[in-house]
Amino acid sequence: MEALIALAIGTLTGCGVYLLLRARTFPVVLGLTLLSYGVNLFLFATGRLVSGQPPVISGAASYADPLPQALVLTAIVIGFAMTVFVIMLSPRARDEFGNDHVDGTAPQAGDAT
Image 1 (cartoon, rainbow, N blue to C red):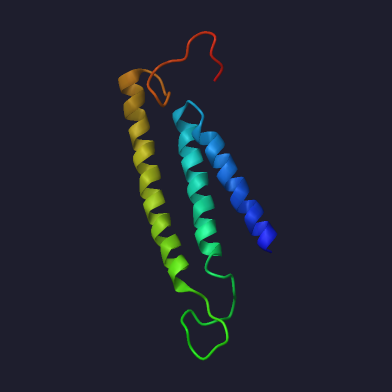
Image 2 (image 1 turned 90 degrees about the horizontal axis):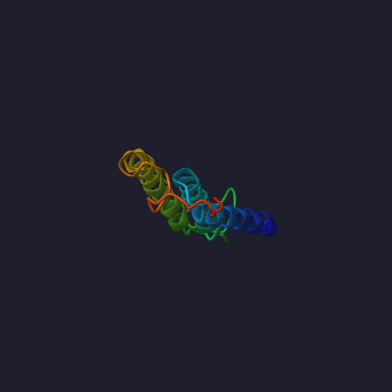
C-alpha cells in the first residue's frame, strides 16, 4: 500500500511540475492543481493510514492523527480559491497582452511551445 501511495504522490508531483513549466496559462493552472493534489495526498499519508481507530489518543493501541486531516482540508479550500483566482486572472491577462502565455510575450518563430 505504501508503494502505491508513493507512486501516486510521485506521479502527481511530476506531472504537476511538468505542466507548471509550460508557457501557456491553462497547463500552468492544471499543473498547480496536480501539484496541490500531490501535496494533499502526501500530507494525508503522514497521518498513518488506519481504519476503525479513534481520532484522538485514548485507551486504544493505535490512533488516527487528526492534524494531517485538518491540514488537508484547509489546503483543499486554499487550493480551490487559488485555482479560481488564477482562472479568473487568465482572461484578463489574455485581453491585456493579446496572448495566453504566462510571461505575456508571444514566442518567436523558431521557438517550440
